[in-house]
Amino acid sequence: MNSHESHDLYVRSADGSRLAVRRVGSGDPVVLVHGSGGGLHSWAVVADQLADDHEVWMPARRGYGPSDVPPGSKSFKDETSDVIAVIEAAGGSSGKPVHLVGASYGATLSLHTASAAPRDLRSLAIFEAPLFAAGTKTVLLLDRYRAAFERDDARAMAVVLNEVTRVPAEIVAAFAAASDDRKPDPVEARRSAIGWLHDLEALAEDSTDIARWSSITVPTLVMQGADTWEPMPSTMNSLANTIPGARQVIWQGQSHFVTMTAPTLVADTLRRFFAEATA
Image (cartoon, rainbow, N blue to C red; front, top):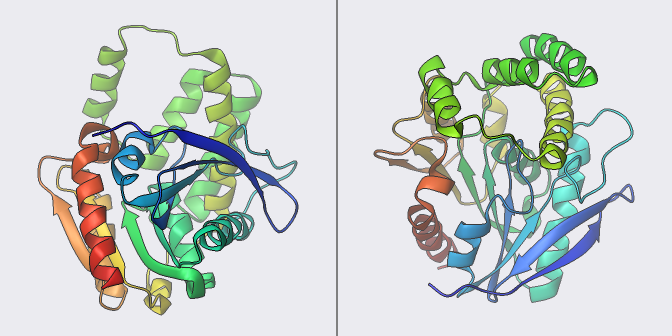
């Protein structure tokens, strides 16, 4: 697979916020929305594999540098406007409707976007949206995270995030062992921490109601790893049954980290789905 040259640009959202976007490839437009803790780099390997026949747009979401960081709290309404602005830029560049793909928090955001503005979308692909991580319980976790953030307590922030994502203790321990006490880059760690804070603000205001996504009418693919922990599998099964005509793929031997562990599998699945949705 060839490596493709990427180009960075800025897109302005409805409220004037600047969103940094990385664009690569040529062909039918695809917008890839990253999850919490991510950024311009999150989809890089998958995007490079799609770039032979697709023009791929990868925004850094609001709250994640080099995109603007909101001065106050963030909501999904704000971010939906952001994604719509990127979709309009991608569609305007090519004159074609856009394939929208979201992972984790980015998948929840993509559901909001498809519900609010389906007209410019050709398809929607969702990977493991944490629809269970919202509402009242998340408000309490947000308060704890903000307190840890303000005193720059990385360990306490990590404990809260593990409760948000429900990652099993044995997986947390495995990651800790694999890190081999390597110190994270302090600038990147702070950028990620700021992004997580704003994501938690949006999640705290959101609902766990999956039935609302029954209004989505664009061709939809629900993707998940067979090895991802509960309640993600049950949540994705419910979502696939809720969106009319949704297709579902469950990758054996994969988990929530499949975009890093098996990017070719993800890219090939998306390319097939795009072709079917376009036919």
